[in-house]
Length: 67
Image 1 (cartoon, one colour):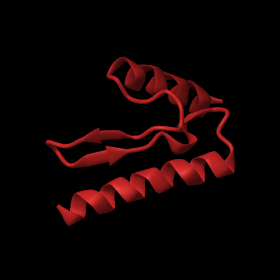
Image 2 (cartoon, helix red, strand yellow):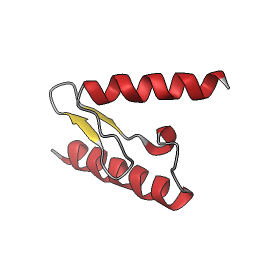
Image 3 (spheres, helix red, strand yellow):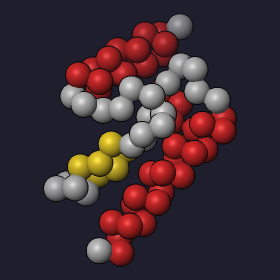
Image 4 (cartoon, helix red, strand yellow):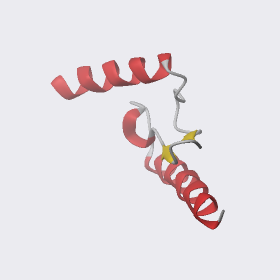
């Protein structure tokens, strides 16, 4: 039960900072070279959606490595 509260708290906090609210996007900080994906942070996430979201993250990290 506490994990749901924590997840909701974190998602709300992240949304206020401009992070994506669903798992169809990723968040990129080019300056600090940080890439993050919500993946399972979305309560309605299906396994296929999580797979696709993490795939976006991996593609972005690989493109940053090649620079």
